[in-house]
Length: 449
Image (cartoon, rainbow, N blue to C red; front, side, top):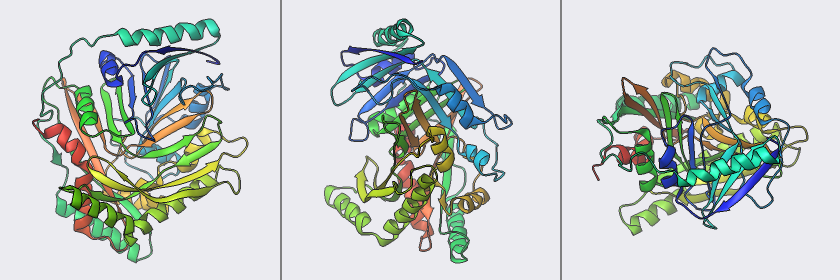
């Protein structure tokens, strides 16, 4: 995979192209919204190698990632950030391999899934062009892979029919709102007792897609209703992941050294009109509670990055930026650093997973508190990532995500939403925050038009 080849092609909408092979095994769509953090979208399928780690599989997942990436490869100057390599899904429970916590493994999902893609399509939303990229052991093999990727633009879906909404038979909570509020109150009590400073406690909803509805139908409708910079669809045997995450977990630049994380902490729903929307946004920006909650996670991520970054390189260049999405406003900060000599993306994941924004502070104790109140999370609050053989890397925090499992010819889904609980959290307000966060998925699944 050291050699690389590329062909520039005319623009096509990536969602339309993805529909042509959405049912293929390990069909991968990383679909951005075209914004400042979502310039590029990527499509791939038919990986050259697939590895999965079930909970009982004792292999070193981070070592396996290193092995699949190899010792490096050529880089296309001025090309897309991802130029072929490994896509990976790290479930939340992978964290148990990094810090033994005896997390529940009652889930259909492996701890880790890795797939090596020698051919990809990269869609530049700013320049409106497509690059077919191929990698191989030599120039001839790389050219063949690039041509294989270019041919995908000519594929047509077996059926252009999209399932009419509503897509789901039901969208039901696993537990009552009162039960969630009681869990929040318990966590507030633990914070008052000095056990932790913050913990992200989640609620879950589930249901079944209507007969004939495919997971890609949900993805297509979701991203049309609620675009996001880290939307993703990954089709695996008997499983499918659908995400419209707004949150970057970790990235490494094309230089293989510059690191960034952008934790989200602090949320307000969108307003019913422009005036209310502006007022809610302004309220979030000046909220002492939300800023303190955000700053705790910034400090946690600075500590995590410092474990693998060069001394003195870790800083927070931007604090408390408000970002607006179709359903919510979010408070987002940026932490950056530079990988220390001899460190790589596997070291970075090992130091920082699971993401601090969806665990709490201190992280390990917060995870113990979360375990008291939640079953296995599976993909939710894990991470979906790509890792280039040239050293570049990017990843999302899998919030705003539905995990789908095929059973008896139909598809069951599970979706979660959480809130960061701190000392002055109000249980009812935190419950309402989870409902605002899940509203995009609820709408895509249940609204009739």
